[in-house]
Image (cartoon, rainbow, N blue to C red; front, top):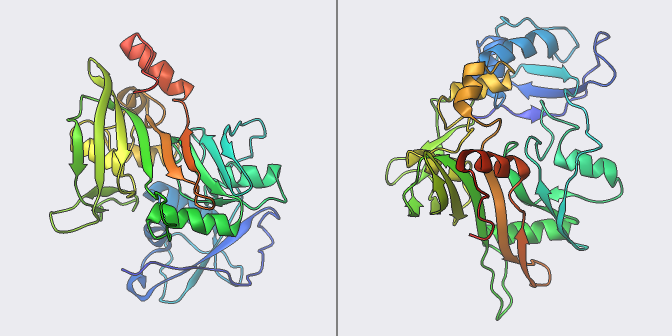
Length: 346
C-alpha cells in the first residue's frame, strides 16, 4: 500500500473551529477507496489506535469545503480529509535542556525523557525544536538525528543548514573525509533490562512489523531480508532479574537496541512496545494504561539513554567526546533494585 500524502491545500476554516487550531490534509489513495473514515485515519496516522482514530474522526475531520465528516463515512479515491486540531500540549518554560556542547555550528543537549524531539499531531509546543525556537527565535535549529520520546540523552542539533547537512552526512558515512582525518562515529547507549543479555555482537536484520496496527513496530527479519543491524552488548552490572547494559550501535535502525534486546529475551524495562505486551503502547497513547500495566512495566518510560557520542566535528574535524550522564530517574531505579549506585564509567 502506498503511503497517503500530507498536502498543504488552501482550505477554509470552519466557523466551529477554534482560531488556534491548525490544519493537515490527507489524500485518500486508490487502495483505500471505500474505507471508513475512522479506519482510514487509524491506518494513515502513526501511533494511532482504533479508539483514538474514532475520537479524531468525530472531533476533527472535515472535507476541504469545511463540512464535517462522519466517522463511518466511506471515502473515495483522491478524497481529501482535513484535520483541524488544537495543539494538545503546552510548552513548559521551566524545562531544562542541559547543554553538553555548543559552538557556532552545533548544539548538543542532554534530552530529558518524556519530550518529543519534533512537532507531531499529538505533541506540538512541548517538543525540543519548538522549545528551542521559542527561547531563541532568531536561531536556526535542525535535528541531526532523533531520539524516541521516552529515550533520554545525547541529541545533536545543527545551527545552520550547512552544519545540518555535514553532520547528517557524517552519521550516514557519506561525507568527504579530509586526508589524515578519522570519520568514525561511536554511539553508546545504556539500558536497564529485565534479565541478563548475552554479551557480544547482535547481528539481526530488522524490518517493519506489518502485523502491528499502529505501524510503529519493528521486528527481526528472516535471514537475507530486512536492513542490516548490529549492536554490541556489554553488561556493566546486574542484580537479580535486572541488568545495566552498555549498547554500542554500529548501525542506526529504528528501535534497534530495543528490538535486539527483546530478541535476546531481555527487553528494556518499561518498554510498552517490545516489553510485556505491545498493546500497552496503544493504551498509553490513549491515556488508558491500567494499574496492572504500570505494575508490569515497573518504570514510567523505557529505561534507555543515549549516553555517549564520539565523533569528529563535521566542519573542522576536531574530535568530540559527548557524554550525557545517566538521568536521575534511571539512577534512582537502579539504586532501588540493586541497592547501589550504577557504574559511571563502564
